[in-house]
Every structure is written in C-alpha cells, then in structure tokens.
Amino acid sequence: MNLPNFSMNTAPDVQPEPSAPIEPLAADAVDNVVQLQVDTPIDRPAGLKADDSDTLQTEAPAPTAKAPGGLMATPAVVTFFGQNFFGFGRYDGARYKSQEAQTQGRAALVSAFQNVLSGVICHKQIKVDGLRNMEVQTEGLCPIATRQLRLACERLEREMADLQLQIDLAAQGKGWVLAALNEYQVGFGKGLREAIDAAVLGL
Picture (cartoon, rainbow, N blue to C red):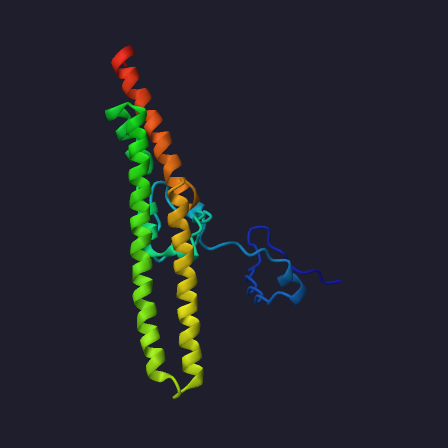
C-alpha cells in the first residue's frame, strides 16, 4: 500500500476560502429587530444647545393659560386686566398707609374699569348705527341680507347690555372687576405691613 509522503518541515499550502455572501434576514428576524433613535440626548455634548433644525423634543411643552373668551377677549378689556393691580396696591399701601387711601384706590380702579367698558359700548353703538343705516338702504332689495343685518344688530345690542350690567356691578365691587379689586387689596396690605416693619422694627 502506498502512503502519501508528508514532510515534517513543510506545511501544505492552505488557500483561504472566499467569504460566504451575506444573506438577507428572514422576514421573521426583521420583526425582532429593535429600532434605535438616531439622535438622542446622549448623543449631544453636555452644555450645548441643539440647533433650530433639530426636531427632537426631549421635554413636554409648557402648559399655556387659556385665553379669555367672549366680551372679556375685547382688546380694551384684556389691556385693563393685564395691569399689575397687586403692584398698584402695594405702592399705595406703603406710601399712604390709611384705610381712606385704600378706599380711594379701589374707587379709582372701579372708575377706570367702568370707563373702559363705556368706551367698548360706544364703539359697538357706532357699529349698530352703521348696520341700521345699511339695513334701511338694502330693505326690499335682498330679504336675506336685511335679516342678517338685523341679527348682527341684535347680537351687538345684547353685548352692550351685558357690558352695561358689568358697569352697574362694578359700582358695587362685584362682577369682572372683583378680581382686580382683590389683587389691589392684597397688595395694599402687603405694602402697609412692609412700611410699618421698616418704620417700627427698623427692618
């Protein structure tokens, strides 16, 4: 029997096998793959702010206060209630330090509020007058347009009546103006206490 001749000093030439082609994953294997976010807060260096093009939101948006509706959304009314009534009261309390001053300050707020509403009523009355004039001119030409003008006038007149009611309630310290009066009164008390502390206790 002839045996192959192996030499102890030489190793047989071994050719590396070509790498096997990568086969696509099966459908069931793809379902088990976990998708990772490409951009996460960990990927960003600490202390650096993302640019404006970054759409990833890492924090929930801050809640926004609900805007007033109806007649309270009238620009003049919104402007009035946007004032710092607490600051006004604190200033008056620290400077005047008397019950009479507080009463006068509250009365001044009520008067300012009534003036604002009176201005809004006048503006709406001008609109009503214009619509009434247009109604007279279009009467008999288009019944639908005439009816729409009448409905618009009725709506404005209801709003004017509601505003007049708030004017009457404000004279009693009630209605919409009550929130402003309460802020003023709290501020007045704080200013008064601070003034007394500074004068008597030397704080």
